[in-house]
Amino acid sequence: MIEHIELFFKSIFIDNMVFAVFLGMCSYLAVSKKVATAVGLGAAVIFVLAITVPLNWLLDQYLLQPGALKWLGPEFADYDLGFLSFIMFIATIATMVQLVEIVVEKFSPSLYNSLGIFLPLIAVNCAILGGSLFMQSREIETLGLALNYGVSSGIGWFLAILAIAAIREKIRYSNVPAPLRGLGITFIITGLMGIGFLSFGGMLTGGDEEPSAAPTEQVESVETETTKEMNIEQGKSIVENTKTVE
Image 1 (cartoon, rainbow, N blue to C red):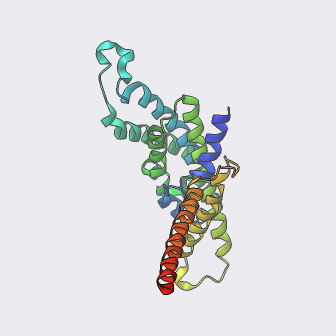
Image 2 (tube, rainbow, N blue to C red):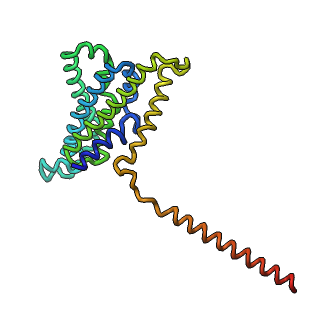
Image 3 (cartoon, one colour):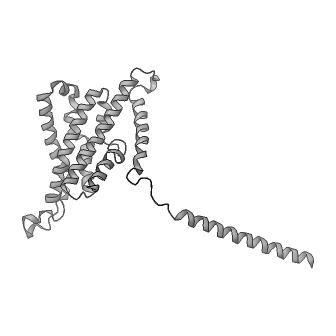
C-alpha cells in the first residue's frame, strides 16, 4: 500500500510529466488558452494513460521482454522481441486515442470541436508514449502499479495544463510587455512553476535525509594540512633564531 501511495504522489509532483521531464509540451502550450479546453484535453490524457500503460505493461511482460514467451512453451524461452517495443506501444496508444475520439465526438461535440486537431494528436503526444517507456525503464513490477503510474502521470499532466490555462486566462487582462505576449510569458510562467514543483523533492523523505560524512572528512583534511604548515613555519623560525644566536 505504501508503495502505491509513494508512486502516486511521486508521479504527480516530483516526476511531473511537464515540469520534470518536459513531455507533452506541444499540447500543453497550444491547448492551454482556455480552462474548459484544458480540462477536456487533460481528462482525455488521463484516460489514455490509464488504459495504455497497463496494456503496454502486459505486452512487455508477456511478449516483448527476453524470455517473456516462455508461457508458449520451452522452445520460445530464448526469444527476445524487445525491438518491437516502440511499434507495439504506439499501436496500443493509437487504438485508445481513436476510441477516445469517437466517444468525445459522440457525447460532447462542442469539446470535440474546441480540441480540434489536438485530440487525434494525442496519439503522437510524447507524454503518452513516455508513460509507457518510463514504466518499462523503471521496471514497474505489477499490473496494479502500472495502472497507478498511468493514472498518476496523467493527473500530473492534467494539473500542469489546468494551472497554466488558469494563469493565461488571468494574464490576458494584464499589461504584459509586447515582446513577451503569447508563448514568451507562458514559457516564463512554466519555468517558475517548474521551480515551484522542485520543492516537492523532499516530500517523501520529510527532509530527514542523513547528512553526508564527506564535509566532516574535508574539514579534518583541511585541519591536518593547516597543522602541518604551522609546524613547518615553527621549524623554520627556530632554525632562523638559532642562526641569529650563533
